[in-house]
Length: 355
Image (cartoon, rainbow, N blue to C red; front, top):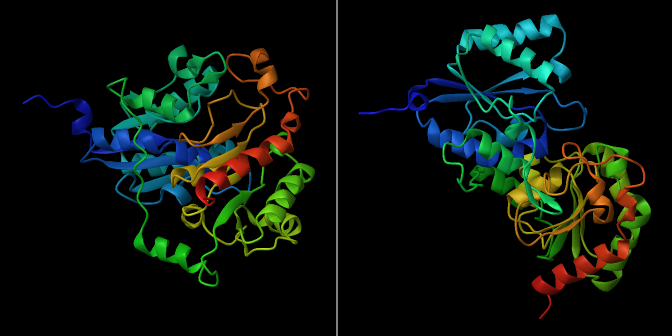
């Protein structure tokens, strides 16, 4: 009987840096890996997020049928002592295979990473982006590139036409926790809002958000609103929603990411920045109205799903470099008009709660 080497591997180490969004878009690739390594123990080597308020990958993926454990390195890998500590932990576990799921490092860093994993005793490498095919996103159309989820599946798939599986399991107690958050509500329909942004050029600004929130508040007085984000965003959300007429639930800094995802599951839609909460909303099939800067190429980090409204500074996209997209001040998120976002919100509401 022919058995592929992958099926024989006992221990598989996945290398994936990042936080919430990076974890969510990894789900299809993790499902592929699990299908290829049905009997293997799989762990992830990840990092503490550079942004202190960001949740690590393990806070989203958890320990499940997909992943059985984690190794964590400091941001940027840390110093020699930290690197040695992580290496000793990996060597002690003794994995057979390394699967590279991180965004590509520059080639010098990639060689260092390769030598590090070889020093851990790992012999088989899958998905290491030495070639251009995994270092660049494929262009799908004149204005759209493949998603990071698609690139990761390309990196690990035997069948290159493999479809993306977003199967993801939550625990029963997590559903209960999310349900209990609404115990004081009277069944009001609600929207999910997240205005947090890791970087200043990804923030649409209070003036724009104020216009959108004021319009929805005035037109739909019974609608509820749920704010999702880090603790540092709580006061800002309180300020923006202080005159909201319907029920308000500010969960910024209160709920863990998996509970936040379930708290958005029954929302009419998510509206907010390109962020971790946006990806959590998409993970539970909540339609998204997403505001993007031009920091990444269009499509790479767009939320999954067909019912989304994505706003991006399209008018200048032809100037983007093939690899990094554009980062100049002239290609600002502020080019996106509040009136267009309000129209998208109106459409979402009309589709779901109006006769």
